[in-house]
Image (tube, rainbow, N blue to C red; front, top):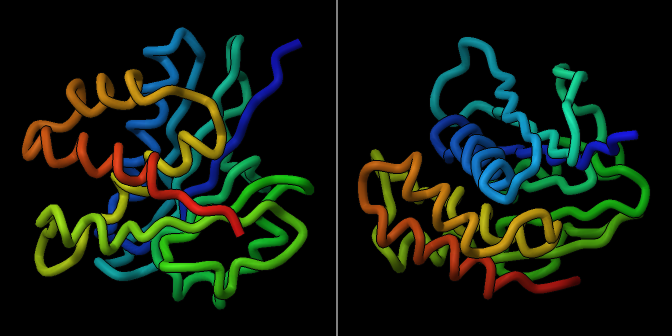
Amino acid sequence: MNVSFDVIWLGRGGQGAVTAAMLLAQAAVNRGLYALAIPFFGAERRGAPVFAYNRVSDGTIHVRSRVEQGDVVAVLDPSLVKMYSLERLAKPGGSVVVNATGCEGVKGGFKGYWVDSTGIAEDLGLRVAGWALVNMPMLGAVARVSNLVGEAELEEAVKQLIKVHVDKNIEAVRRGWNGVGQC
């Protein structure tokens, strides 16, 4: 029986949640796993809340609907912590990783983690239209917390799918991997 490991990405349009889900899926495939990246958004504009999902398994994945509860929930914009119930989004005993400088607001019946994705992105100059691209550090943090893939698979996925600022994006993933803190 194949067991699926599910990830929920919660961000705002323009932060790269959909791209992060695609990269995690590619990294899982690079590791020899089966993986899906599932975007979920409407006609919202930049800044509107956006969900993306991953399903990762060691066998064929038949369920292609959105993820109701994740083993890991990644919150790219800390203001969304107040808008959504992280306890409902995370499976019991699951993990939540928030883009933050500490554990404020990361409380509930889950394992809490934080990473300063905004600071990492700004330090590396990863910005588009004035927005810090926080998805790459979050990708590194989620991968480390979940233990789904290693740094080598992430780096290969970035090289396969990202065509600009590849070295900066790989460095952002590494810093997210190394910079994640537990609450």
